[in-house]
Amino acid sequence: MEEDDEVSEGMNRATWLTGLWLSNDSNAYEYWQHATRNAWDEARTSKQVTEFGWSRRDTARVLLAERLQKEITESAPTDEASLFSDLVSYVLSDVDWRRIALEFLQELFDEFDPLETVQCARGDLEP
Image (tube, rainbow, N blue to C red; front, side, top):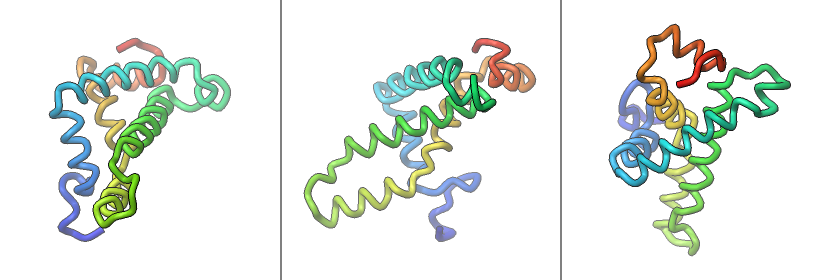
């Protein structure tokens, strides 16, 4: 990554712009807030948590990141081969989907203090 591509706290421009658009567009923001809550709920009973000992927060982060990547990548206008579709595909491949998922999950825990957030991520508390 070039220095100019780093925007904030080690975040590249593709990740920053994607997160910015998802947070600033009211319909997208509402949709992904709902998806975040669904990932959190789904993580509680997932195999990663119940059998493999993953934390609920890490599991929710992976579930949400996979959904973000899948839905946004599939909605990109990249059907026909062109310079534009190649550029869009390239930029989307540079997005750190887990970082964006973490940002949405952190918003879910905003009302808690740090200790409660850790307990909540382990599944001890409900947000």
